[in-house]
Image (cartoon, rainbow, N blue to C red; front, side, top):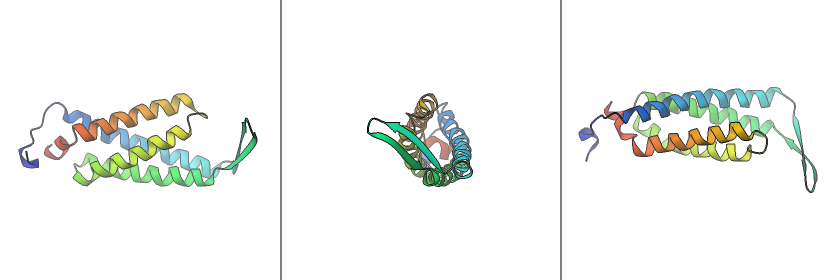
Length: 134
């Protein structure tokens, strides 16, 4: 079946859901990145081997850049761009990995964002073709 033969069903709402979640997630990541860049420069963690210090500036830049990219791809996905589906899946997978690294610091938020990332990947891989037809 070609893209021109794709019929729009009720499942197109999953694609719109994915676009909205990407836009909101991008904004939240931008705020987290800015918070890390503006806040203190070092975080301290107590582990079994001793005390670890971590420079969070790189973490802040990562989330700021990832947030801007996710926001832009979410807006393009809202417009029905085909390339945005592929890029969105890649960026959401990176966001899921980033949330796994934060699960010790903020478990409930990380699990909620991870669940949304999985839903977005499902929406874009299974029902993403209908966005273009919309």
